[in-house]
Length: 310
Image (cartoon, rainbow, N blue to C red; front, side, top):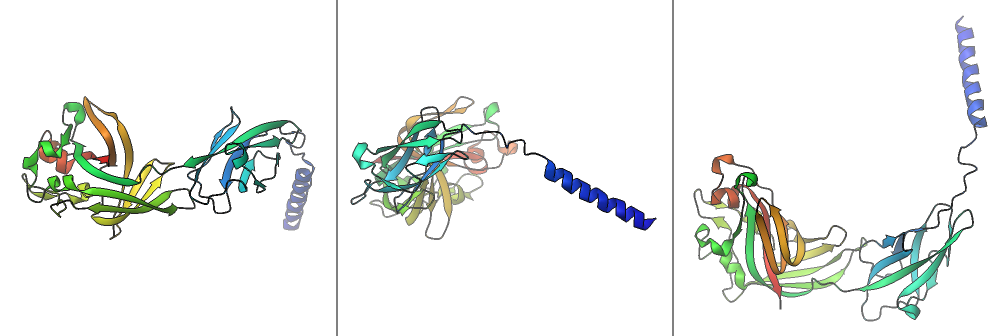
């Protein structure tokens, strides 16, 4: 009886395999009409800034490229990913002359079905706008437990000097200079370089210690830009700037231009020139709600270092 059962199992397995082999692929007769560029990556050492921006409707691709002295755009090799089973002309990786036509080149993508579409790839010369020297104008925090109940507030540190020591507090940063220097581009298209936070005429940096009750060291929240020399890295995809101190401490900010930010619950932040906008993670404390201690120490939410380029 057991032998018969084994035989039945073997027969079923063979039948299943034969049946599966006879099944027709439902996509065998489907011919693709897709003729798109999906992605473009520059080669031969050209520094591409961020991913290519593909506009399928317009049939265009914009690629930011760092142009420096000696950069040659007359023999550019680009790895071009196209639609499944499509063909591209000129071939992906073939050197082409972008310089001859205002940094643009036309590629033809032909689908499996034989339909063609012309695409324009444009190389956009890139300038890192972060570079240069800045003065620190303001340091501003938005914090508070229960902002929907009126617990939130936007506080300019200079407007409440009694929260800090006059000899060691945030006011010491207002004569500082921030200098950003360019060093290169990562394989992922992020720019990077050196940042120098120079103490001003007083030769001092702030020690962020809240002197209310209770006195609390809050350098973990507000020492976001490194003292002295550090590193910066700008990610254009995420729209953030990463600071790394000489001791390896990392902080991340959005670099914003002039404008007004609505924070909700009638709280707003105005940026006059530029600002580094750091997210903070405080802890709700309803026992301290409405107090400066809650807004600055317990539940700070965002911190801005407002700067102006010289």
